[in-house]
Length: 130
Image 1: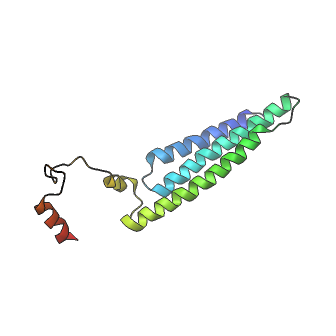
Image 2: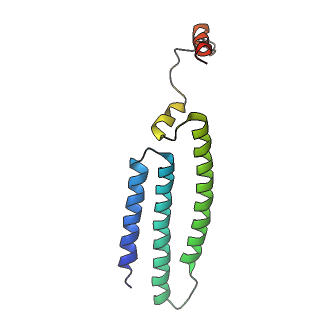
Image 3: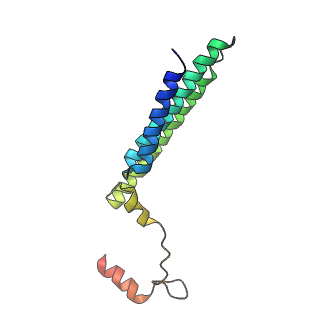
């Protein structure tokens, strides 16, 4: 088999994953797209390892060893990522990335007085809505 076939497949997988990361709003789908991109890299590593081992005399298989490390890192990444997404979903009720951006610190200083504490009328509004 030529090296071009797995390389083209890897490029297509990586492009699909990149589109998923850039276009999706759901955090779980973004994590799945990142996994797709990592699998495209793994495919390239193994394909080039096989191609280089045919041309060289040594059989070190460093591409396959790097692939195993990448799979282990991807498994840890997806475990931690899913735990974070589930915790955020449990607290916020959504896994939508655009809605999660609202949780970042705001530049709205109108609710703070000169000392940095909340103004009394703002604190009363917050207690009334809680």
